Image (cartoon, rainbow, N blue to C red):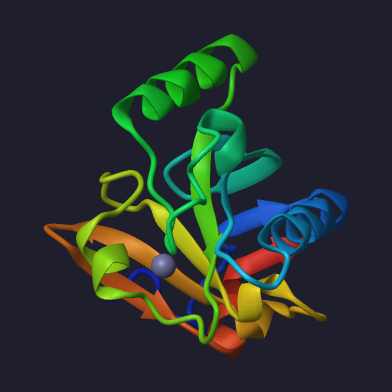
Length: 165
Ligand SMILES: [Zn+2]
């Protein structure tokens, strides 16, 4: 049985307050300025079946030069900062998000290098550097399976997997 198969799901994979979601996309749009990738960790609470985002932490707040390449990279020191932040704020990483210049498909590097290499980790990709009006069905949503394998969702499947409240 494919647990994530759209249409048979009783609950969304990821939930977020609509305002926090809107703030996140506004940040990605501004930070990338239509010319470069930007990204963030989605933080909140998760259980086996439920991931609720309550806030986000932009990559450049962990590492000033995270976005200076033409793709996003974070050092080991930045991950230490992330875990320290999560500990002190009592939150967990529920997903990550980054933008692409063109479509929402994963690059070879995205597939090979999950930000969090834990089975079930959720990665979102936003097309067009998050410029303009981005709808849920424009996004790519990827669930890490381990060993560099992912389950990929796009289009209306994403709007079923993400619930904004
Ligand atoms: Zn990418």
